[in-house]
Image 1: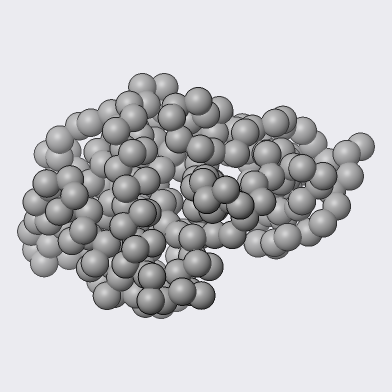
Image 2: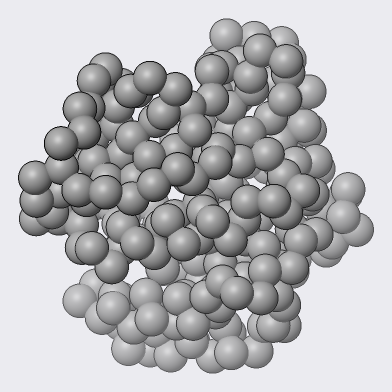
Length: 253
């Protein structure tokens, strides 16, 4: 049986270890299915060798009843830590993050699942707290959005970017990667800043992305209610309340 050595982080559904030169995620078998673990490994394998730096997938194995994924361990600090420790350089780091996201979104990802299908499914699952009328409007808006095949990380934020000792940027956590419309991916990142109480950064991020890509800000904003509804499934409390307030399709028309 493989040994899981230095515990780095513990979350409700998984534990993350450093073992030698590997980073190992151990998933709780009662909370994470085998299918979901294998899906994460497949997504990771499909973004390797595509022109961006990602940790290499090493293997998938079991420890007891729990499935594990082993990745190359990247020595470095998160971009989030750089931002927090160097607030005077926040705008500079934000621009580098956007440049990296643009680079990712220029890649086509034909073998990944389609983002629109994932969003439709998640919106359908919100019927306990989003009215049928609002869900209908969200589904209709999503159906009308342009269909693209760009690589979307779907959880792109400073905590998922590692800067190694050479200054290279690595993008982590591709579990939710899909193919789809880049502006939907931007909307997810925009909401991440909002969920963390960083409204000013959210606006700077969105304005700079739109400027760099010649994208109409109104176009990205049309995605906000759609992705907010989909994201609401994984949050509770104040975070869920924030997202549900953002599902107003009239406000983000």
